[in-house]
Length: 384
Image (cartoon, rainbow, N blue to C red):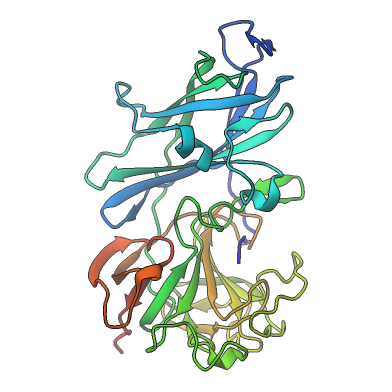
């Protein structure tokens, strides 16, 4: 699934630079005629030995000509001498989408924004785990009003984005052991990462760190004896567990499971299928989506303990195969919320899903980390 309702104060950082611009060049040196917005500041999280800063820059073109973002330099506020990250050329184009393009990112990568249009830059910064985290980030953005790569362009010199100091929740596994693929998990180009939802006049990125958990069986695959029956999928019917102590804030059950490989009409009401939302902190909510019809074991406002069985893994809602969509957000809403990171205290990394073989794979212990996208990992069974 791509794409949960409670309250926070959203931090938006806006910069307006209203300067005339002609098709032949910039009329003044104060900068390009754009608005830049960071809807949600990065919350640092660990992936193996790296700290990762993940956020978006929304760029709206207020000029009468197309504007091309030629270069993006990102600096730590504490150290302005050399950039933490630089995007230019193909790497910059690959990190951008034009709002309204097919598939919200499935269209051609381009750093050019049409007049009146908006583009989104998906920023992903890797830092060594032993490096002090910056308190904020400063952005230098070079725009050009021409297609000439040698054009000097105009520069937005100091766009600021704060770095959040919010704690990252540590979750216990949502299953009692097993080998699982972290489908479309944290990665700057995954479908979850690139999903932005517009509802009731606001935009949200609820799936920024979402994972589609698919169980891997002893045959090294997600299913056995064909894919036409839900029961042929190794994960179907797997108990889904509370990842922390908390209170149930939303429960939906009664939606039929899909026939595998067949997707029913999807609406805002059924996109998550049968699902449960568990509040684990003042502004931290865990969504469990696509649960088996009739399997939900908890009630609204019920308090549960870590490890308690909530439901069974199913194939309901916006899904074509049995899996658990799990995400952590800042509000109790599947879609109208912002996705935030989380970590597991330990798991074994078995390598990328594209390379996994039952008898031939790496086996590396990872601690206090979120899994990378499409990795195969193993959770240890819970000792009782």
